[in-house]
Length: 460
Ligand code: BG6
Image (cartoon, rainbow, N blue to C red; front, side, top):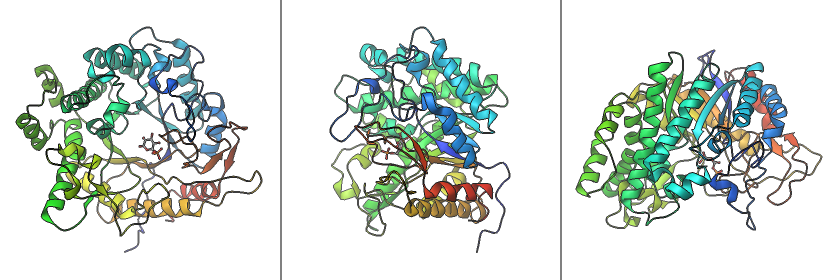
């Protein structure tokens, strides 16, 4: 069956980024240090001081987004820019920057979405309090979040709190939560995860109690996990990993509390994760207006590779294997549009809450000769297939989807600080060690997207 149905008129098409991967201006206008600002460049990576300098070039970047017919831009508010120490005075110049950025979006008909935390803990809170290990940091974060909600929600109606919340339940948590010291125990992992969850829920409840027209949702790096074989052990391991990493979190986001399977595991293993009675009361009130997620590729899991006594939330840190049926990009990430449909349809079937893919894209190595347009046909094919798959989920499977946001559609350094892994429809002229002129140069996929978006995706 072809997708002959028309896309919803109010569908969002846009771009997503984080602060440290775009803004630069790491020490300007009163910004405090985050843990990223002190990470030095290495041979194959850049530092985080300039990124693509969007702090000074946002007008130009928004013009490009408008030209591409986008109507949503997801940005992050950098905690250390608006509150340099994280728990101290607010920096009015920092808030002023986001006021200008958001007003510039609205002027162009681009709806803002705000994310409040994307791995960049204020350095002071990491050093003094060990980041989200501490309840002090939970309180400081909630204070910051409420202040942002009160300040911006007259203009910003879509909010998420933690980027890829399920990473806080895997080994990655120790790199992204401001954790500076400790033995990286399971207790610590579960505690940090719970502290972030209760932070999310306190802010979601705040929005729902105070504002009628403001929407907030959970956000995962959705784990579309296949068993390596049809062995029951592989199938069971894949199911467990998905329960711990996907449904456990959306369950909590939607007021169902943590998964019974996760609670039982924690109890049997005597995990102390600092869940108070008060937290449990807050958790019951939680609601999600949408379920957001990032999706780049699917993953495959082998039970045989998982050592004994590993918690299911850590399986993917051990048991990931190649999927011989899927092609990959240069970094080994599979290209799997049907996995994208599977993710959307599964989420909507489970929760019946609108689903919102807010990161999708393919990292490619690209160089610009200074003259000719970059022909990124591989990227065009990737987005085309994923948009098709999303439409299948909508029109063949009945899922409600709010929009489709690509990741880094103006090139930004990858999460590993490597500028040479590019996701953009627009090339940014810099390398890891040479800032050159940071010129923005549309690629072939820019013109392709421009047409697709102009027709609201109806021609895919
Ligand atoms: C997500 C993160 O994991 O994927 C981003 O939210 C990241 O910060 C993006 O940049 C793509 O991953 P990577 O490692 O290729 O940059």
